Image (cartoon, rainbow, N blue to C red; front, side, top):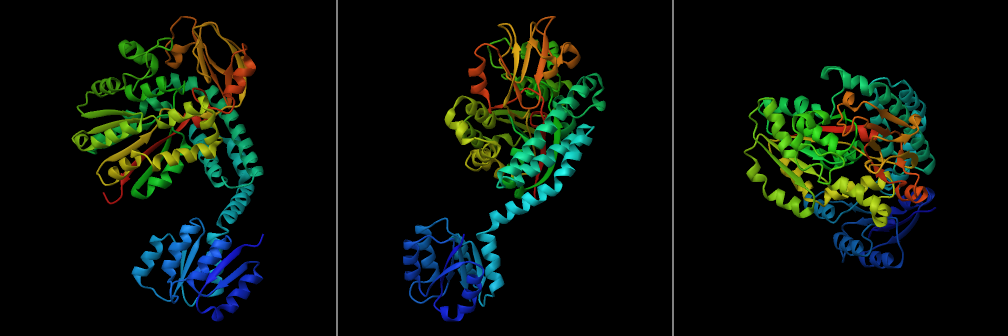
Length: 516
């Protein structure tokens, strides 16, 4: 494919050597000597890039640029000028030029700007493909050698890195990485089966940092140092989504990035209540029965979060003043922004943001949303778009200008499921697709992680015979009744509650404003 260039310059006779150079490189070059002709050429055909002299007689380069941008706003325009005046540069940049070249221009400079503005996606994709192929064996070895939670965290970081690098790569690379990720999740599931109950039987120092440890390990130490803390919990927030958001907000902060391990089930009722209370679910039910809501109860499962935070602060005999807020809608977000000045007096401000969890559920229920977030990359893109256009972006700008230490985390992540696993339960069995609890569950024990003694996993048991089972990898539970419809409806949806790197290895981020 020959790329089409438009070059507008009133001294075109001096550029013949440059034109021949570009033509020999396979570019088609259309030459004009003034602004009106450049505009007419743009009306007649589309160009891949436009080189525009800033100082042409009659219609200036800047005036021509404005007219061209009205016709073809996405076409990259490179301003070429003898002038280095700051004002001219600012006007050109403000008009969204793609690049800026100072005369005299040599052919290699032009070639570089063409590569940067026309070929960059191809070059990046090609380099990413090549790099991943070279590192394929290294990643495979990293997966097979992982023996600790820290090593599994590094495996997951590496996989997410390649997922982001290969977003514009060819399908073959995507399929190779997807296969490696599935292998990794299957082996991670075996790792969790082997170690989870050992962690539950260990002292807190003998297991990874988990949901109930977040305040003790990461919030209270900051408060003890006299820092004001803004603690943001984004429900159902994955590490790959954080990596995308980090590029948007990271320039304003010094970032300390970690991962921690969510408890099972990787569901809001269990994991977020554990964060806020500093207790495991069974302990919450025993110590604060009025604040715990069982699966079979109709009321909301997260209505007592503020009270749970208060119990944890009191239990550690602390005097920290705090606020609690939850944002479900854009209106609520705007209202919260209006209250920020009133929150400055608190030692700790806690904010729960529900957008991503709402998006995940909406994707399951709505064909239109499912099409918009058809795959992992699209899911991340919507997350980024939400941040850019929501009040939460304004919140981060406010925090960047403040003296808060910001901690961002989540209760759990989610995984895109595609493999049904049959399970039979009675009418009281919960509806979650990634975990089940009940007293009469029927399943293939080889396909699940089963906990037959919930108390040993610090999980509440409504009945003496209650057991829990968890889906691993990308599987989900389906009932035999109306099986085909059920499978078709939930296949490729994002679910949580079970065992996968995406659900259990979740971000824990500390942000400090730069210059503070």
